[in-house]
Length: 87
Image (tube, rainbow, N blue to C red):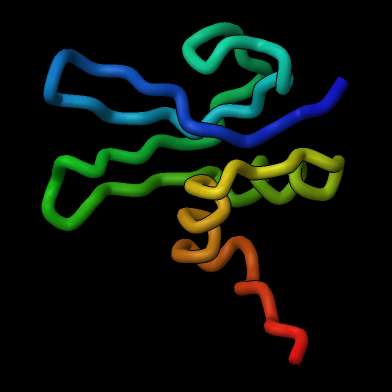
């Protein structure tokens, strides 16, 4: 079972907010998830981000792969280090 960290869209039309969830890769984007580790609200100025750092690190250490958006959010929060370029 491949596990991913991704965003789950919630809210109403034109007023979205997102939960950062741990889910099976095969489950639908808006479907079942294993664990909710935070939330992200891009509509507020500045955007609101709240992540349970311990749970995020737990899932990353156990092999969960973050989506590109979740990866950038984790880097902004200091949970993941930026990738180093190999030149």
